[in-house]
Length: 458
Image (cartoon, rainbow, N blue to C red; front, top):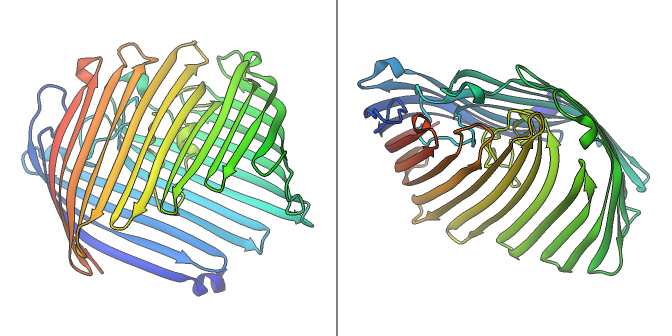
């Protein structure tokens, strides 16, 4: 390990910075809004390491907020994102590790305000960690076997929410995955036999145990069409729910269409979790620089599963915050139907992305429903070699809330410029607006911010 670590290519970028922020709602209050200037002193680093058996990327930022008028709000902010993969035994034994420590403005739809600062509003510190060793073996090209164990932990600390019924619960999850997948010798027909079991322990909530076995196959008819089929068994053991209603055999059948090299569409219809289901996925490569995706899926999960199962890396290997997601946080055992779609691309000096989702949840302990819809988008343009302009925004709405009075509409937007004075000195100016209009007026929140940033890298 030490030899491999030394052979890795390391990039370590420490920095210091200062932000001057103006906010028109220092306390995050619904009605009695007070403005203030905040000086943030921050330091941190970004590190990446790539070796023959090691991949690591991490970023840490430590900030201290100093309020000009309301010093009782002064405090530290910690934000850490890290992801690593280690290969202990060549092509066989691996270890994946993820950690995310972020400051979030907590609400039922998972929204956060732009001014990531110390505040007295609905906020929480989220620690999300995951460690996952796994072993894989190639059976002569005919099959690949994988055995994986995953331990994940989601903790909420320093939570400050006015809504007791929506206080998030800490979770611990132990999971085992076993899979046998068709190998390279099966050039056309694909098959898989998969099984997993997990134990989701929830503090002050409903625990959930689940075991699932699934067999699936894909048989091509021609180069454009393939038939899909799957079958298996689910077994649930959850507290305060009707386990027999969602346990039992399941099956589905469908088709996969690849009419051209750019399009891949699959759909399956069947029976699972006590009712009919549809699962569908679409990927369309608009060009070599842009892609579109969409999907619709049904699943049953326990409290905090969405946080625990979200990767710290995006499809391009860049760090992302797993503690925020458009579907919101569900603190209970739910049957979820989720539709999502997105667009991402890069052309010349422009980078853009857009996504939308519609999530329908049924809380299985009391039969209540919750529907959340959201839209997010971003655009960045390199105006010159040193000057960059960015724009981002989004909208989310809790259409049907599990909690009485929990309906909520939230929209946000931010725009700013970033200028590179020297290779190691960067400055920026940004304006942000955040507006949460809740059914219960005391839970509403509105904030405008203007920030000036200066950062020195070493």
